[in-house]
Image 1 (cartoon, rainbow, N blue to C red):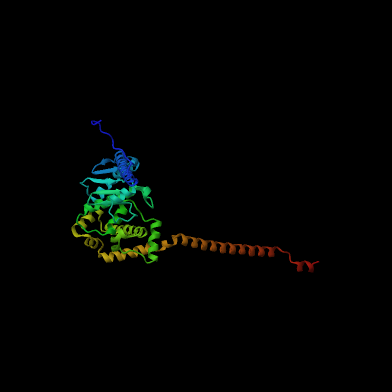
Image 2 (tube, helix red, strand yellow):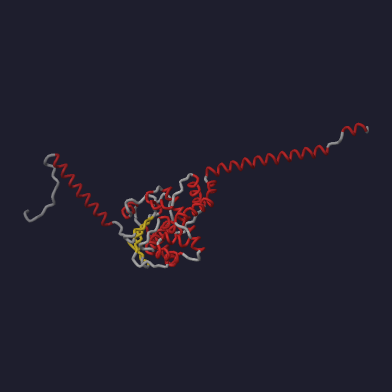
Length: 331
């Protein structure tokens, strides 16, 4: 009937080629429809606010989002006291649902070992989920590390800060300490002459994972080394930040330590060498050799102790034996 509209039908009454073309177009339209459908039913991102911070996540990541929220509640008062500063702007903390979402949110040149990143131009922190990391890290530590970058950037706006100080301070504020494993890394670098100069840590983004781990350890130790000077001077970190803001980073180092940056690094290097070079023995292969030497020494001592006991026993037996010659003469 002329007033009715009929759905178009796929006709294969023409040539076989035209039929195939129609099928291809039909399949393409069907794929687009299905893709759009799944996008429409995909779980929507949700967010939770805490003061000037917004945590953005998907419902499946509720537990990790709650951990980030607890971390904010704990560390924000500490950071505000440490930096003597409160972040005025809204900061987004994004927990991407998939690794691809993390890569899309982060800079293109970001190395794969990175666990989180602070994006100053967007006032945004992106944190990887623990399951995506080669060495799973505590989400609370990762967030605290990135928050340190956020606070330092706001506290010292416009001041050029070297990467070793930025990263070392972030390591300190996230609760990192130089334990035996980190001491071994420093010792191995000293032994292999692969220690990284502090200025070279500015190239952190092109480091391998092992180089980055060494750089983070060096940075933390350098910041702790500087902290000793700050305390000896009778200052705290808040006062030291004021000096940096007023005079610049290098002049602040000189004012507090009495040394220029080069002399400071030389003294710091000597401190690392004096404290950690003997940690080389904690390498597994060295521990095995040490254990073998100790076993050998123990075995030699045991044999020597046994021989001495045997000799002593023989001497005692000789004393107790009767004198046969004396008995013959008296018979």
